[in-house]
Length: 275
Image (tube, rainbow, N blue to C red; front, side):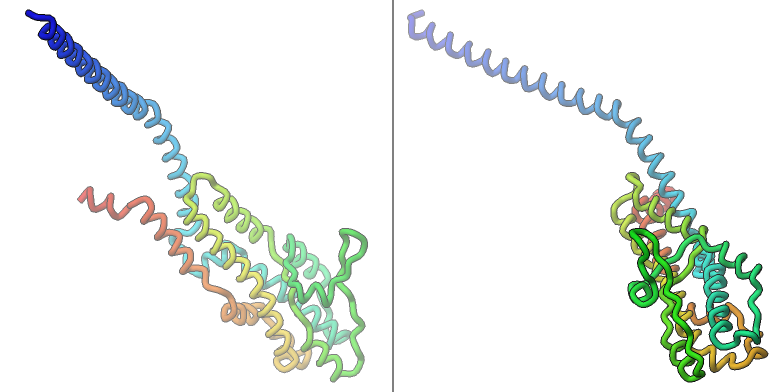
């Protein structure tokens, strides 16, 4: 065999070795990747399972809050009957002190009991500008304006009153805290948090609507309760009926929240698979 033939054979052998080596390393790399992916599944699957369990628990709390509740039950969660009762009593007391002082007496013990139910209040900007005065850096007081003696002026002033201060109860406060807790959960998807924020806004709108109801009721009180005898018929349910016409609806958003969870978890699809 001449030198040229030997050289060609050596080159071919070298190429075959290179191809073999490349193939070997490719096979090793693929096997290593497959091993890593399998190991990754083995290592992280239990962690994912645990996270999903916690997420299901978070979903369960939201479902429990809204499930099988209509408009009345959702308002009961916010303690709206008590809130309207407290603020209606204050409206009643203000009406007596304005128009029937000396004719009708306010039960001071009952007044304290009513106000002890209140744990806080919201104040509109308009009300604050007109009635609240800053004293020092943190203290505020509600301005007490002298009521005129002239009946016509009294009536005009009464009709001009604003009801931007609405007392709420501890139960209402706790309900809003729970909504914020849901929104701050790292386990719930962002879209669900947006829906919960929308619901919180509806809760706040429902509370603000109490002020609107009081304002409308106050303007009708001189006509509906012109005498002490007529005033005995005053009932918070009257204010509640006005409030129902002004408050935003809670149930549609509650259903939207539950439907989103149903879709997110694929509950309907799972049911079909079992069938």
